[in-house]
Image (cartoon, rainbow, N blue to C red; front, side, top):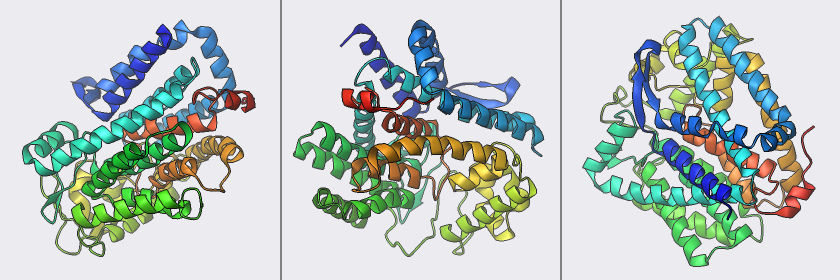
Length: 435
């Protein structure tokens, strides 16, 4: 390993840890920013690296100029959305900064992976190790009320959720849904690493069992969807069917034994803690999600070109949400917790047709090389991993989570344009550079 490779690896670990453990450093009263995250300073620490390796960066920027240009245009459309928004411009610009930060982090990481063979593989392995460590932490969180309260207070804005007397765990991530989805994605990531680069069977199944149990402890139906749908496709591949059955059995067993929601038919989610509890038995997550989706579409109809502005869905729900939704989720709206609970509808409502078109164009230029390289059949661990990430944004919109967004965009970049990031020289020679 070269000296440069060592420092890049250390930086990758530091950045991932700062994202996963979302420590707030200080506030900026002049900009009404409640807390500046530590991960932002880690990003700034890595910002000079493109200048230190300027020739490499110029080559990288030339190869990825199309994606970089689309990302820049999307941010410009967000600026227009913020200025045309019915809400304060500063509010929209602060939310838009979140998009800029996770895009900058993802492209910076992807550039660093281009400097030395196998650095992308190191990133994936680090993610897998982090998933297992967070899973283990969630076990302690589930049985230790003091630890649960500490993590909720320090990293989840004090939000505590208890279902049927059991805590919904989130480890160090911002909420249990993100944690549950990460556990499911971690299973497919381990599977890919095992098939492509080798892993002892006992290690794989042991780590997989940990992640299945942690998924169950999270009480995340979104995370369950992210796991079970790709597993269904893997059952139809003779090479993956046996492993898929074992994972399916472990996940189902964990859901039966340790999940906080004991009855799948009971879609209500009574909460206790600092988050206001829903009003009475009428609370129903499916009903509330449909009402939020309809409200987001109404926002788009009223602001079709540039939307209501970045981060505007929660604010606009006060005017667009029906009375039943306001009665159920008024506490979350007051605390700024709600979004459109669908990635596509969230962008459509907040960025309008202009921003959505650019976002879809960005996705298109990521999916085209993925489709050429991996195809759809036979369905394997790579397809399962990528499908799981896509499914995460069906019932939710995780754009507020820098950790999940940096992970998602970076993983897609690695598989779309592997070069030598996965330690495969053949992939580098076969890759078609963007022009």
